[in-house]
Amino acid sequence: MAPASRSGRPIQLPPTVSTLSSAQLTAQATAALSTILAGQPAGSVSVGALNVATGASFTAGAASGMWTASAYKLFVLEALLLRRQQSGVQLSSYERAQATTMIVNSDNEAGYAMFLAAGGSSGMALAANNSACPTR
Image (cartoon, rainbow, N blue to C red):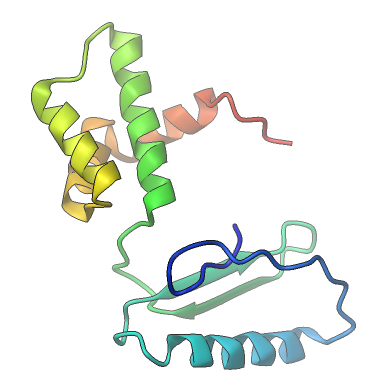
């Protein structure tokens, strides 16, 4: 996932090959994030990155209790729709209203309600396993 600007739009970074050590890269990332996060409320941002080729990872910011981003809410909606499709049941008017609030307003409470309606963690795992998105 590309980093986001303060407006929430992704920032496209060119691919690079670094000769810096892991410690140097961590120091650079920490310094850059400190600048970016200076105006944000304490504990309001969490960042994580994983190099899938090497397994190296980086985390900074709040360590727990973070609400999910809007992109995840789309996946929650996909999981709910898949669950309803498989059971042959339409979304209820409550679910439609909550889904609309979740997506249009990026509402976390509605998102959590939809997460539960989608089957929670097991519903999300099922949706991930049934996703039409290629894994490679």
